[in-house]
Length: 263
Image (cartoon, rainbow, N blue to C red):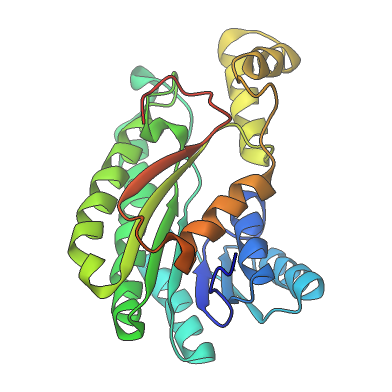
């Protein structure tokens, strides 16, 4: 299948590790020119060098915090200045802290709103004009399986992902006439550092061992295993491609059938 991605220009946020890095690598393998961002200049430079070495793609690393509007604009500008435009933006802001309602204070609510929802607003606002100019756009966001059903002890994620869903669906209907597609992708349990953090938090909350938490988690996944970052990235690459041109406004899980929610 020809994905039609060669020569496209993309920004990927939080791309020094985990799902952001895997997605950037997948896009680079298809010939996409990349600007990747992370808060730590050393780590993002290392990630860019690894992707260049493996794929031969053009990759620029930029130190930027997706929680800051000016930094989001800096990343978009870096792509436009380097490559002359932008067609693909992958928003990735990580997950807010674990905790139930009584454990979360006002500052944490506001920080999660900024981190997860406003950061997507900023990415959309900065990137969509360039997508319109190119008559091709893919605005994608990595969220959580809580886009389909709430996850215990993750109230911040549950609430903010619902907002992301509403924003993405609304945007999709507005920008579809410009050949711009908007999608939310919810990873289930993929083998990344984020999963390790959540397992540790669950162990501390319940008093169980981390090993027991992981065993119970695996038992809840019909596929019987964690997903691989590359498997998740493959779906991101597909959504970014011309092959997915008539898909728009979706919120899709990549979770090994772990969620009980209907599509």
